[in-house]
Length: 171
Image (cartoon, rainbow, N blue to C red; front, side, top):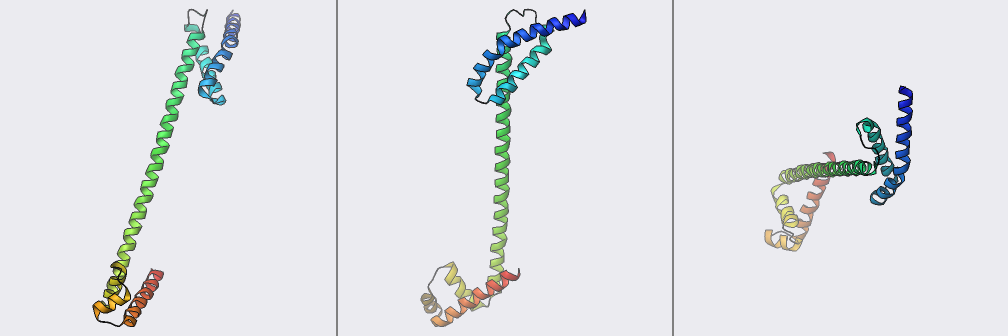
């Protein structure tokens, strides 16, 4: 008796499946444009139908019910995709922010180290270097302002650069 009921249920279900699958597939494949997703949605639709089969009183036209199931599952899939995209976007932004923060920390550490190296220089060399690099003065102008020869200015800058290279190489 139970076996007969199960066979009848299966035959009725198969009939509904064969009558509605093609129509549902056609409609949702035009909307979704992703064959695998459409098939997945329809599989979920028919699983849901199978699970609710005994609760359905009027089985004469199940297409509207199946369409509603498919539409709701489709909407849920779209929401899940959007949540995933939002999460991925947030993760990328967090990574970029962390990278920017790291770069900013390294930049500040580097600037502090440069400042320490400048402070280690003899006063006249520091003064020449800062006028050249920080204020962009020419060697000739620095020589005039500090009452030095252009060769002395050149030597101070060369010594400052050597000191930077040596100190930064060992750090």
